[in-house]
Length: 344
Ligand code: ADP
View (cartoon, rainbow, N blue to C red):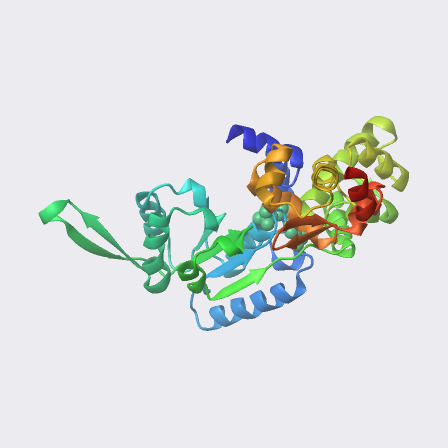
């Protein structure tokens, strides 16, 4: 586990401790500061207004999408907009049904229960969640054997907000109990520029618009990465120049961190490179790929792959992952056919 965390930190797509602290100050607290994802926001606003009008809690919501796109932020914003309390936990943190009872019985009417990585809930815990989500009660069994008794406990009507990077891994019964299901997509550079300008103001960083656009373009469509790169660039500006962030400085700082002009980092390039050089461009199964890279399969699927698929550098076929012509071009390698001929 510790090793996995370290790897994720190196990959830079999940939350590091530094992120956790800084994100609290950068995390938009209300809908007006939440940039992008227009369609989702429009739907969330309507649902919030309708729930408030009916004086009812919001229906359960599921957010899916790659890490760092704002799922947790949206859960907090929903609580803020509903004027209720939020309790945040994650699938792997709830080990036994008993842990969940404690959490559920402490919720008040309209409160938000946020479960991150909900696809990683244990099956026994998940089953316990069904009646809680559906009819706001839980059954717990006391005593054992012939003396066993089931007690029904009524809960306050709460809203479950689930987040997952792998919607496909959610069981059908769990998915079916959410009233709303939204998939967050990568952000456009213009949206990231807006996020960066807001963060720069909050962190007191002077960055011109050309420089902000360059950071945005290299952030893999991900606000968390944009904010992180902004901090790296700020360090560079403070040490190397007068503290002002210019386009030249962004180029210099990000290249020094191994972030190329498409925003790919060393691990992204390594994944492409292995597919191309060790497997003739693919297709290669995810298991073999993970073994060759000495990486966790989940890390590749959750963190590396989504963006490479999005920009068309990688293709997922029934026989495995394939590198595209664009990937060869980006890495400055010869086309697939040529590389294959050379191999045999
Ligand atoms: P996720 O839960 O999807 O992994 P988070 O909600 O933790 O992502 O987002 C990571 C950080 O990125 C937040 O703390 C926030 O600073 C920033 N962020 C994410 N989405 C947005 C957005 N739409 N507008 C502004 N900042 C955002």
